[in-house]
Length: 194
Image (cartoon, rainbow, N blue to C red; front, side, top):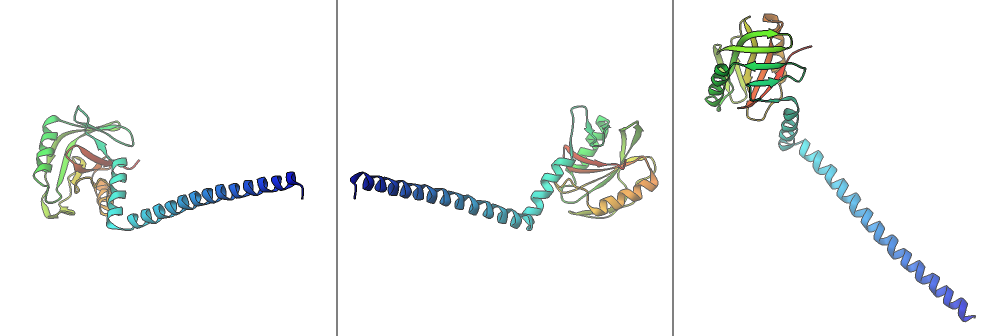
């Protein structure tokens, strides 16, 4: 056999072996990436379907719907407009929040609605029948109330189904009223129907 031909065959075989090694490295890398992706998907499914996952989803969704206190004691409404608290009313609300950390509380905020904004000038606590860390049952707010407000545990800023039913009942008392949810000393969530 021709020595040149033998040399070419060996070179082709070496190139073929080198290509197989590279393909093997690429295959191993892709396999690792695939395994990591599958593991992350399974881990996220496990988290979402556990208590930890529920709280994580609740925390993230709460951040999306809640509003932070502005320097002028106001909160931006997600649907447009603002809620302005009189300084004294805000201090009363903060005091009530601070002294009710072991259970939820309920307050009725009075004032007026001007266009899309609410001006809170008064606050009172309705009679409370029952309260615990996850619920509060009280007398309804009266018709001068512009915000029916209660608390949730810290950073639990999403309205429950019961909260929405209470809002519907409050709408029969004051159709312009909104509901508020206090979930931290400077964080509230508000809801009003359009």
